[in-house]
Length: 145
Image (cartoon, rainbow, N blue to C red; front, side):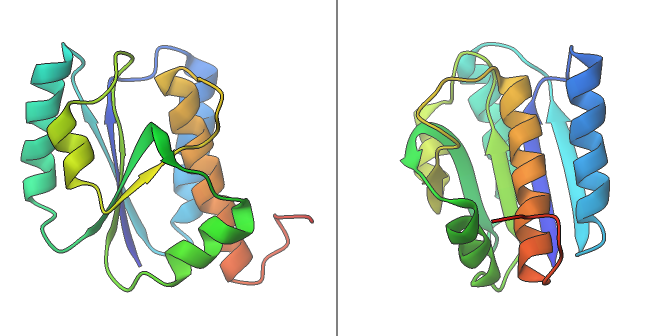
């Protein structure tokens, strides 16, 4: 299984950055995970940089994290990724949102919660939930119901 996480900006909070990296590392037990950090700027420039990166992913399934996206329970998310038979790409924009063309490129707009999080928190939550879903699909014990 191939996965790529594309994020705008480097973590400023060292604890959240370290925990995100820990979960990315844990995901490596289930497949190759690549994390790409793009420089933060304004929404238009970030959008161009994200689209340039997504051009490399023509055949991938692209999840774009967005507040207006679909909500999943952990089990539903695990089922969704289990059904995807190609590389998965997860996109997190910067603190001021995403350019419309990035949202339009998504195969699925995904909302982590109706609550608003900083993009650093969203990165951590994505990494943790991705690990949780992969472990769940493998019959692991990380997810407790």
